[in-house]
Image 1 (cartoon, helix red, strand yellow):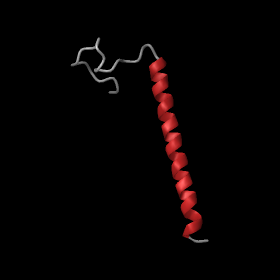
Image 2 (cartoon, rainbow, N blue to C red; image 1 turned 90 degrees about the horizontal axis):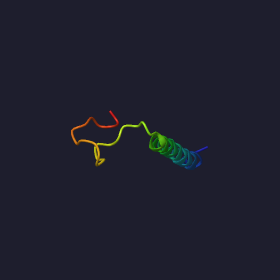
Image 3 (cartoon, rainbow, N blue to C red; image 1 turned 135 degrees about the vertical axis):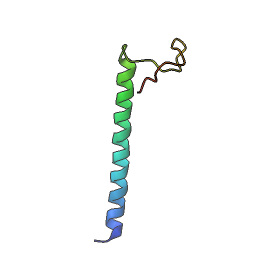
Length: 56
């Protein structure tokens, strides 16, 4: 076995890891969007600009 066997395997595993990471992030964003009690962003028009950031 040489590098030409492991290189495509490594590339596919990297793509799979990136896809899983992206899907987990998407799920977290959708969950937060559906939560009415989630804090609003400081960029929202009805929140003061000196308020604490929502992700802190």
